[in-house]
Length: 307
Image (cartoon, rainbow, N blue to C red; front, side, top):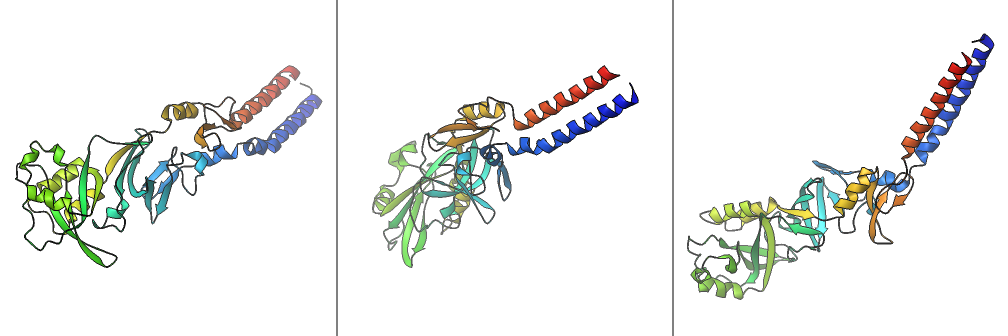
């Protein structure tokens, strides 16, 4: 190659590289804001890498479903389901599994407000190892000897606990099983059924079955229900349902899963804009890499042609 042609080619090469570097930020800045925001994950305490269908104050609500808001309080993750607040003890994104514990029962069995553990079946379902227990409040005063405990052949724990809510003292009781679950309900002492029927309120809670079995195996229940409080604090399992197949397809196409609040439907956020299910265009990064590859290829061909 003639030296003059070499200098011209080198000068031309410098101009092209400068052009590419100047315009490179435009490719990065062209990424859709919703895609970038939903690419962030949630971290709180010892739980991290939480994505769709969840959202929080640092991850916009369009990145998850309306009923899957999380809150981080004092390094503890919380979620509210059907008016009840739960501490999130663990999350498994692959199996769509949550381990949660009622926040209002972490310290004692006497919350200020009585709320059953209920779920929206379209969003959550209990795992197979969940056991339900019954707590009774505003029961009659124990002026007489307490009702007898069930026979040892009955797998159940029945006990009392004192409560003081808003400076009001009252008696509470709990059963770790429903009477219908007993092999022979007739063995259950009638006096207990009569006593519980006189209680003012009843709440149904969920717990892990193995933890409740430990409570039932206790030879003498604690007078304030501490053993039951400890069992409830271990939490119970939930599976969530959240357009999982659509989200898998979206992620497979390079998008981020989200929710369109206008249409109330799933949305796949991509680098250029949202799509219904999958991304239909290459990513901005891919566009930049492709463009740069074409430029380099042209330069190489130019040098080869002039040599």
